Length: 392
Length: 110
Ligand code: SF4
Ligand code: SF4
Image 1 (cartoon, rainbow over the protein chains, first blue to last red):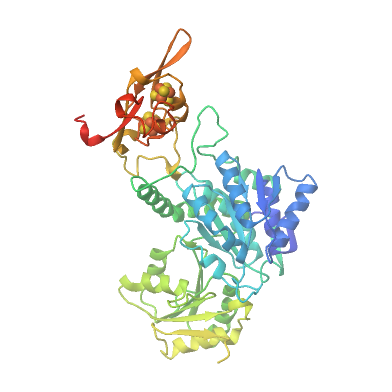
Image 2 (cartoon, rainbow over the protein chains, first blue to last red; image 1 turned 180 degrees about the vertical axis):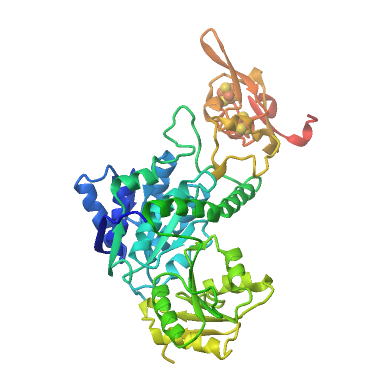
């Protein structure tokens, strides 16, 4: 385990801004939006202090922010932005263009409820609206993971077999504004880890001129989509490779799935983001009472870890999936994907869907217990969506 | 038309990885009406050459002056802009007096 030299109490936003300082990207273009604002504020301070060489572009909207980083990345720059909620929604058009142009932009997203009605607090509806955009989605549980995953994201996206943009999701306010203890790596260690930008088809290489964004009709568009599908298939392998390297410098282990007390677990809960922390605590409480419970938290949601979930969920008594977003008129996004992954497993567990925490509604130990207890008594219905912490 | 490549052979991201590939694109396959040059009526003003969106007007320089030579039908997509801007071509002139005549492709064998 490498020695911890730099342990600080910081917010998740500070942790991410510090990761960005250490990465020292060529270009950052961003527009402030709650609760992402402090990330950009802290980073702008680094720019003003001359702590980074970054060209910072204060744009007039998120649509422009994403457009600017697309242009920068196409030019061959290491480019980053950050956003949340309606900002991400405003980027939507260009979010797809970044992925289909195969530009490895890294974007922390402070997950926040989408309007309307207007709400600034945490849920996952912003990122879920982009789940088919072709971006890799990493999900952090706390400030430490937000920092670590931002560094890993950079290497993952730029990898020759991947070449895709990466969204680092960290729960708005809960992670972005909550103060936690974070172990930072040395600047030099990060510099070595991220290395020089790995560019492909840079527009600035005037000796080898290329065209980005040409019209791509029925004769080639389909083939380019197939390439994106293929790139996603390499993500899990490359993530594991990068995570292994990251472990050597940090002592912190990452994988496709974070598994907590699952080895002998009969009942497994699945959730993304900060709620996993509350679930781990609840798992401990329930274990004290003799319940064999565990948690699986996907660190990667896109590409979806289907095979890994099939292996781990096969033969369990029950699986409870918690979603912090709803899909109106259909099943919630995480639940839908888990349920579909289970179609082909030999010993299907009972499965249930619980939507919680919309618009920042608090999720408590008692809510998590309630969902687990439904599972204990076999009171789960795969076709019924239930709600935690909602008034009837 | 060049043979279409499979997804494994293409550069990623829809990038075109070499310059001037439009030269390989036979826009002439789009043509349904064909402009035909009648040199006896042409005053070599170069309006057609200036306006043609596909650079399909062929010229030669004689005594330092450009001369309209005819069409490159590999690229000419038959839009008719040349006939539209030609000062020696309009609907009121009988066909044999025009510098450019637009004819249906069905009248040609090639
Ligand atoms: S525009 Fe008409 S007159 Fe002028 S060069 Fe072309 S064909 Fe000749
Ligand atoms: S018809 Fe159109 S494409 Fe063909 S030569 Fe005239 S202007 Fe050019």
